[in-house]
Image 1 (tube, rainbow, N blue to C red):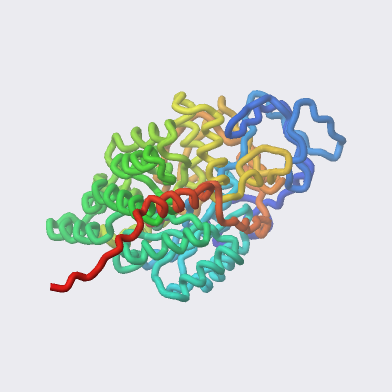
Image 2 (image 1 turned 90 degrees about the vertical axis):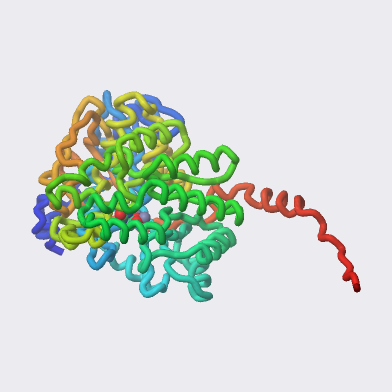
Length: 510
Ligand SMILES: NC(=O)NCCC(=O)O
Ligand SMILES: [Zn+2]
Ligand SMILES: [Zn+2]
C-alpha cells in the first residue's frame, strides 16, 4: 500500500514509508510520574515482550534493556478511542483514512487502541465482520469493533448472538438519524435493546430525530440555504435532545444499559444527567470536536473552510463546548471519543451545491489526547488521574477489557505514553499523519506533548518520528456483561414484584 507514501505523511523505509521498529522487547521507563485512574506515584515501569512486568521505584536491569528517562514527565496508559470510522463507506464515498493511516495518526498522538464501527454489508453482520477484518489486516495498533444494526429480522437477531459469543463484539450501535440509509425506527430500536440485554451487550445510539432532520433539511433548501451553515440549521440541538431522551426512556423501559455516542449539545447532556441522577445506567460520550470547537466556521465564506466542519450531530454554537467540558469534569459524561471520520477537500466538494451531500465527519484521532490535556488538565478543570480515566480507563471498563487495557499495572498490555507537561504541540495539516489535506484544528497550539508512545511493548513514536510495523496490531475480543450489567437483574426482579397481582374478572351478563 504505497498510497500512504504518496500522502507523504510517514517517513522512512521500507517502500511504503514505514520505519521498522528497532526497539528492544525489554524497556525500562525510569523516574516518571506513573498515573492510573485512581492513583499516581513516582516509579519505574519495566516492560518485557509486550507486557508490563514491574511497577515500582528503583528497578535494576541488565544491558540488553532500552532505558528511557521520564523524570519530570507523566507515564500513562495509552489512549483508547471508543469511536472511530476508518475505511468506512459513507455518503457515496469512503473515508480517506484507512486502518493503517488512521492508526499511524493515533499512535503519533498517544492513542494505542481504538474501537471502530462495523457497518453490515446489505444488512449482514457476518459479511460486515469479514469485510472489516480484511480492512484491519495491516493494523499497527490494537483495535476492537462495535457493530451497527441497520435492519431487523430473525437472521440479524441470530447473528448478534454469533458476534457476541464467537467474534468478540460486545456493543451494537443504532442510528436514529440518516434517514434512507442507516436510520432505524423505534420498533427496531426496541427489538435491538431487548436483544442487547439478553446477550449482555451494550446498546449505543446516534441520537438525533432523523425524520425531523429530514424535514429540517427540506426547510433549509426551500429557504435557499444550500451551504454548510444549512447543515447546522437543519438539525438543531432540540432534535438531539429529543432522540437522546427517547432512547434513554426506551432503555429504561427495557432495563438495559445505554451508551450515547457523540453527545454534542447541552440538550442531550441534560437528558443524560437527569437519567443518571435517577439511577439509570446511561453513559455519555462527548467527542473532542464538541469539546474544543464551536460552529462559527460553518458560516465561513469559503465553501471548503466551512465544509470541513460538517459532522453529525453538528458542532454547536459557542457555549455548548464549555458546558460539555464541565459535564465531563463533574462525571455527568464519562469518556471522550473522536468520531474520527475524515474526508479530504475533493470529497467535501461533493456537497458544493447542497449541504446534504457533504460527507459528514471530522478528524480527531491524532489530536484527542493533546486537546483534552490542554483544554481540561492544563487549565485545572480536571486532575491528571481524571485525564487517564476519561481518555483510557473508563473506556476499558465499559467495553470489558480492563485491566488488560487502560492501566499501568503488572500484567497489563504495555500500551504506554510519556507526556511532557512543559513541552508544547502545534496542529497542522502539513505535519499531521492523517491522509486528509485539512485539519479542523489547524494552527491550534497548546501545552503538554506526547513525546513517546509504546504500543504492544514497542516504541512506535519517538523524537517526532513513527516506527510502526504493519500487522503488529491485534484484534482485541471484548466479552459481554461488563460492569454496567452488575445487578441489572435485581431491578428486573423488583419491577416484577411491583406489578400487582392480575385482577380476577368475571363477565357480567346483561
Ligand atoms: N459523525 C459523523 O458525522 N460521521 C460519522 C458517522 C456517525 O458517527 O454518525
Ligand atoms: Zn453517529
Ligand atoms: Zn461516529
